[in-house]
Amino acid sequence: VLRLGVDIGGTNLRLALVEVGIGAVFASRKERHADPSPQAVVAAAARLGRDLAAGAGLSSQVAAGVGVAGQCRGASGLVLSAPNLGWRDVPFGEMAARALGAPVRVANDLSAAALGEQRFGAARGVEDAVLFFVGSGVGAGLILGGRLHEGAGGVAGEVGHVKVAAPGGLPERRCGCGALGCLESWAGGVAIAERAREAAAAGRSEALRALCGGDPARIDAGLVERACAGGDPWARGLWEEVGALLGDAVANLAALLDPARVVLGGGVLAAAPALRLLLVERAMARALPAAARDLQMVPSELGDDAGLVGAALLAP
Amino acid sequence: VLRLGVDIGGTNLRLALVEVGIGAVFASRKERHADPSPQAVVAAAARLGRDLAAGAGLSSQVAAGVGVAGQCRGASGLVLSAPNLGWRDVPFGEMAARALGAPVRVANDLSAAALGEQRFGAARGVEDAVLFFVGSGVGAGLILGGRLHEGAGGVAGEVGHVKVAAPGGLPERRCGCGALGCLESWAGGVAIAERAREAAAAGRSEALRALCGGDPARIDAGLVERACAGGDPWARGLWEEVGALLGDAVANLAALLDPARVVLGGGVLAAAPALRLLLVERAMARALPAAARDLQMVPSELGDDAGLVGAALLAP
Image 1 (tube, each protein chain N blue to C red):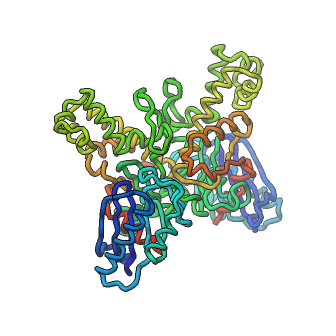
Image 2 (spheres, rainbow over the protein chains, first blue to last red):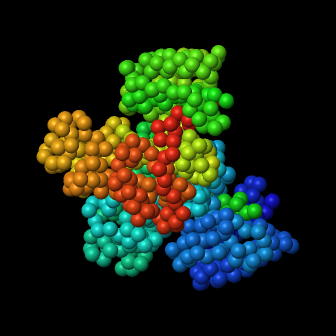
Image 3 (cartoon, chains in turn red, cyan):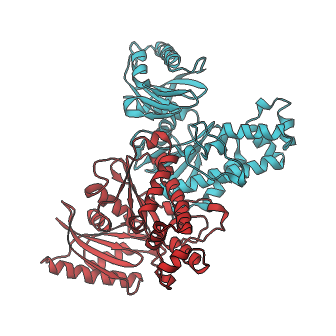
């Protein structure tokens, strides 16, 4: 059975025709948002969806699942807030169903990805799993008792907005959500890049200044990882601090939810093995022993496809 | 249908015959542990269970549910760790089934209490609810997707062992679990009493010294509440600090799980309305707005009976 999976990130729009019986991506499209407004995104999704359907020789539109990088009331299709897209209270489910001419189910992108990993990826075979994701932001998707847990309003898994103490007495940073004290404001990819650019500009990291070749805009988590691997003390210190924050978050998730497995996903963790190791060590050291005893921490298997496959699985 | 509910706390053993169709306690017994060893507790439970059965004119033993103040692998009946009882890796389910001569299901006491509140108390009518409990320790019971969530190993809900930063630069306190940095080591009833006794002994709180009548052992959360109500600055400061820690914990639970309702339970919160108010205000101020929007925070309805009723509901 083919279903359409749609993944709306802060930067890219991705669509895939997915054979949902086996989790295989039949064909996919990806493009940068030319205009991130809901109207423009829905129009682009409809265009790419028609394109995919035509390419597969499908005469009618197929049902679609849509994962959005934001807080969604999945059941009603309402996107409450998607800060990286600038959306607030957007009835995206209705808009997409009209534009695609097919039934649509909306969900948080990491909820969709968790479902993908559960059915066809790294979370197969367990009843309780958490997808812990560090990309531009920090978030989670929750599989509890074998089922996707979206919460009463559909906003569960927002671990990036858990409040943490500022590390090392640093001044608080404002999160994209508007609040102070969010984990994401210290440990998300956007925050990491900002802090690394500040350090390079202030001359605190020679390695980063050299690695970026004079263009601070090129600094990201991957470059911090390279600086750390090269022995740069500032980069190492940043990874220790970020690893401790992320490790504590995973330890706290373990004490609270006692998952059998935590799946580590997202571009930052994929690009930064040293950070991933610090995270895992810290989580194991700080988690309640009874919860850590049988806890597995494994990398994502589906990577970027998890959200597309999971979204397609959510299609009505 | 009558079932036996057993609640094994750090101080007391309680049993009740519960009409599980309506959640009514038919008859109950309570006694302090003379000896908290598993052998002594199971013998006391069997004696009180026979007593209750005889009083109700029951000819055979009834199936029992047992809530234990500790980390339990419910399905296997194994109590991994119950620090306040001094238990570690105790096969309590087997021991109880033999002693009671009836099938037994073991669970964490707050998981049982959450189930009681869901079926007959303050968590009725919602799919996603958290029982947030502040007694001697801090803990939670989770109802997610309409079902009790105990986690892969049965230790979910251990919010007391979530790691927090020491407030106001104070030195870390060691938790009963052995670790540093646990929420419970700052905000549980035992920690509150210890800190208040230290303050009274050091002359930092005139009110507490007066209220305890020269006996620091009488100081507990209820006395701190009275000192606070009387305008004692130290007591007020403690409540602000503890309220902030507990409020952040509830805010973080809301961001992570998005429950429709948080039920506030436990002796400390029951005895300290000023603390409860500070907790609720802080949680609302710090929770992710999308999760806080429709979040209800309500007091427990079943109180001490929640664990007994819930345990009886778990009986096989």
